[in-house]
Image (cartoon, rainbow, N blue to C red; front, side):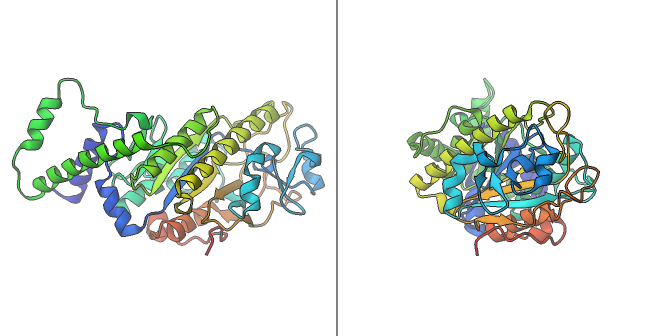
Length: 390
């Protein structure tokens, strides 16, 4: 049995439970640190210009007579930029130097297709030649097929490794052994057989996995939220992520998403609601971590597959664009605005011209936060905007 076979079997074992085992994750934690990166995917192409608003730029208001955020409503961050008013729950983090915005983020040869662009962000490969995700490659690098999980219904491409998929957790409440009906006796019998060599190691590992899963279940049962979460699906997902972190799963990356940012019509109503949902969920999550004494161990990083056109369309919305903004929050970030603002007088086919390759932002998360070899995961050296605190 080689290393690849072991991973396949381990992943198969993981498929028999609705959560992830942690024995390997514990080993990885010891080897690689105890910090967690939480990745938030804003699905649909969030409009960066109405998220981090260039409120002093007349070109912004000229291009968007109906959907621009009025200057009087902008949450001022600097002499030129401010946040969408729905992000007000995050102002306390901004004021505390724990919220960072990365400007003008994109990739070479932008693709306005949701599918293609999201695949590029997931694989960190603008050529679309790779079929494995950047988080999947993390698991390969540290030798742990359970070092990351998606909290949601389906595992995204970002969590696909060469030979297996990292687990998705639909609900932390279902974090328990779930064998198909009628198979428990056979499973116990298989586990009790005497084995030698690597098979014995796998048996021991499986027992450790089950023991650790039981421990995590017990810890999840003890969890008491340190903050009041709003009533939204996204907030429930963030609460589940907090529960996983607090219960000691030892995972390095936790992933979730918030959808419906594809605002071709009536953008203000939809984006206002979604950004409000995002901000309220993140505020509760961060407050929860602080109460649990875990805030210094967690950084949140958010992205969307592309931004929107600079000019609004005839339906009071915006169409698919190119570059956009990213955000990060936590004790580990260097609060502020990183990178240059888009030049709204010099566009590429109506879109802002990106200046920061998203892989540079990833690289800083990988090397600066998780202590991993970013070059081997991303396939090259990429310079970031310096969004992590030193």
